[in-house]
Length: 152
Image 1 (cartoon, rainbow, N blue to C red):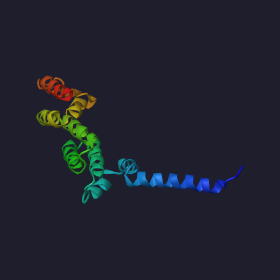
Image 2: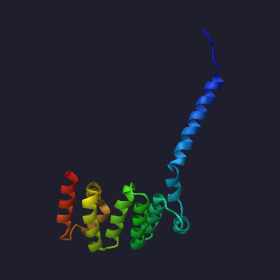
Image 3: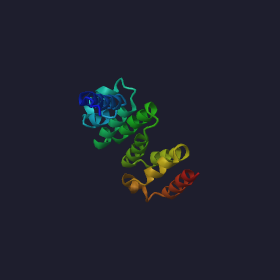
Image 4: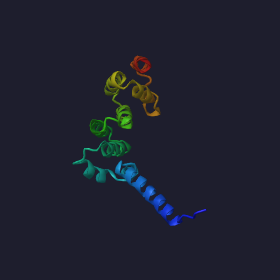
């Protein structure tokens, strides 16, 4: 029986692990946590020249936490512009409209979502933050329309 050096196997294992971490870092998997710890001012500096949807989404989150709902909606729209795959930015834009107590803009937004992203519209209407608009007469038709589109 031939014995092999464990040193080479250990180096291969460490190299593979390092390469995997490098790929994850290059894809931005660790950056989201970093962005969530930044202040509004730090994110404002980042978004000034950024075309990264994740940065704009984090900025929108901070603005929404600070109660600046109108500005948060604009930040989420930029996030979707630069990162169309960011479903959370679409959801949070709707939540910010609901929290801004702007039912006209909220239902217009839900109508657009129901046509283009019906599953996202259904998910938005199930969020606890938008329940305050349930009393609006437009809620039932908007919810029914979103669900009907989601089934198709």
